[in-house]
Image (cartoon, rainbow, N blue to C red; front, side, top):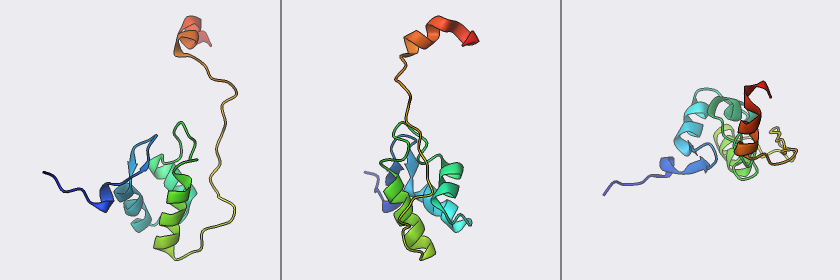
Length: 95
């Protein structure tokens, strides 16, 4: 049986970003959650960071010794309305 480590923890479920990827980026010089988002895609999935943002902020705080900010530097976009793939396919590539 394979041993699972803390590094194997999934931070962003939508984009399947592991803690090890976050730590690697922090060790490579990333210092903000926005940098992590751009380099790992954490926070860019379906939930737009609503689930992983607190985990990213904790990781940055721990590795940089900075306090977790009151206002996040991550932004998220809400969809205007859901769109079924069948509806999108009906219009072809000229949409």
